[in-house]
Image (cartoon, rainbow, N blue to C red; front, side, top):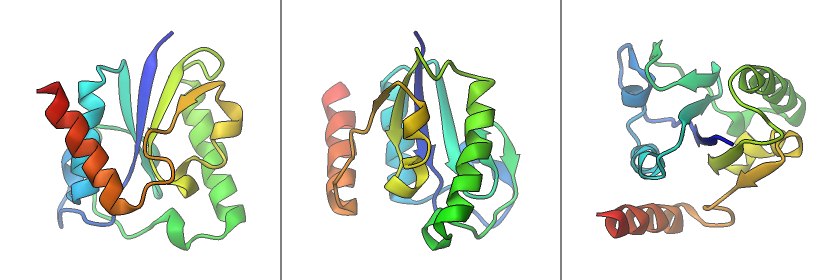
Length: 140
């Protein structure tokens, strides 16, 4: 069984092409990535509203798209695409998927994943940041 962490993309980005791990510069993304690395997963991927499932090392141009402004049917289509990408990298029936992503980014993925965790579920942004900082500090 592998451990996979999925982090949602962020609206704050560099204004030039960069590796995905560097492109997103918002505090929630940065803390989520640092926390994800501490979990020692087999894979970390970004859930991008524009590109779907993104490897941390993939070079991306900045873009302005979020699931938060999409209609439910658009998000479902996005999720179907992400599921296809995920299936080529992980076993949705046996691998453990940890979501560091908002509800809109995980809602239509979860029904297809047998083992998953949502450590930030139900937390407002400030509490999410506190949770991640605490987890990072506790690991030091």
